[in-house]
Image (cartoon, rainbow, N blue to C red; front, side, top):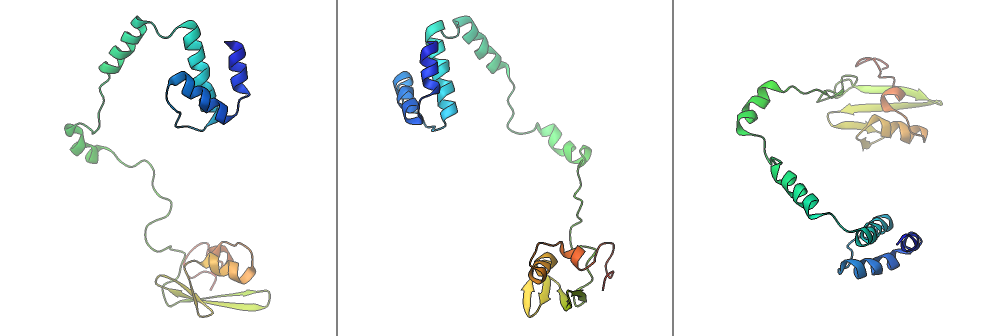
Length: 164
């Protein structure tokens, strides 16, 4: 048995699948070499040493039947859950517009390598050189040719209006 397991360790996936079909009587749905090897090694050991005793099999069934499986929360907890449970994690980013951005219609200016970069803030994005951008980072990347944080590039760190 141990020699056969060692041979399985060096077998190809195709060889493992053929052995699986031989040992289990049905083709494997898996092509994962490690999975096939482990299943076949287990089966070889089960054949050599015997499978679970009937007593162990019955005990496993009894344990499985004792488990109280729930698909939904009990009705008495559903209404109470909304009152008792509070979210433990809060998003660091508040919903809506980023507070670092000035309002729509504002203009951001930045000089970069002798070039004046002028961006108009829109309600749903930004306009730079007659093109629409969804983020300041995309504009900063367009200007510099390298990835930049748009807020950092336009110096909008602390609050709206700073860096204009």
